[in-house]
Length: 300
Image (tube, rainbow, N blue to C red; front, side, top):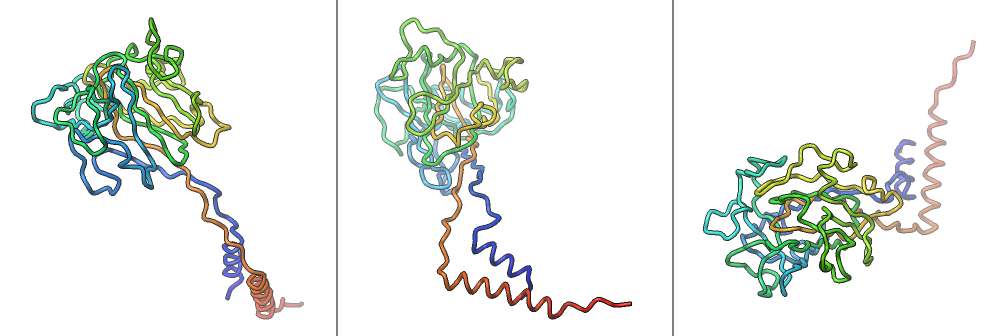
């Protein structure tokens, strides 16, 4: 055995050279279930369909205007009769960096109904909540994530959403509240107060660190929101966040979640004393063999 091989074996045994934790990028399009094979359908009520690895995600909704809180899927390609034509496309006629031709297929929305549905139910006529503000979609991750991006469809402008100070303890707007452009918040596990928030207005404000000149809002618009990272959110001292809430100020949908989650290193199994002694002995023998075979230096 060569000395290089011995070094590698020792490094592996001692856990040297590996990363303690690293991010894995996941993309959730809502077009298939967690197996990546089974297609989803128009009107599917969602919840824990993606709760297993690698997504580790549960989805709920908070409808500010109804007694029922339902998150469901709308097929943008649906060709039948629909109450909600603003979510159909392509073409996307309202502008945005995905307009006019992005094929988004199934998208996530807040359903407009007082009927209580169960996960896996199929809603006959999917229709997003049109009252303002509509509510929020809530994404809970069982393992921390370090970034979060998504597509946003049919958002008409910054007046569609309220800021944290305009909401009561239940997340509902206070009387007389004024929309501020707030739309996304990021939480540590179990926290009631967000670590950071970002508003619609910050995406189209040239003085904002989140400004994206490709984004434009409007009826039947389609935009890709680049991932928010711990660094861009000013959370450099935070390991990750476990909940993301996207507030929708009116009829709208979300698609193509992109996020990095943390994967812990494999457990280090301690070697018994005899194994350590064996590895040390192998290293000594390898060094001795190299010295024996080393050619003598030429002398004058």
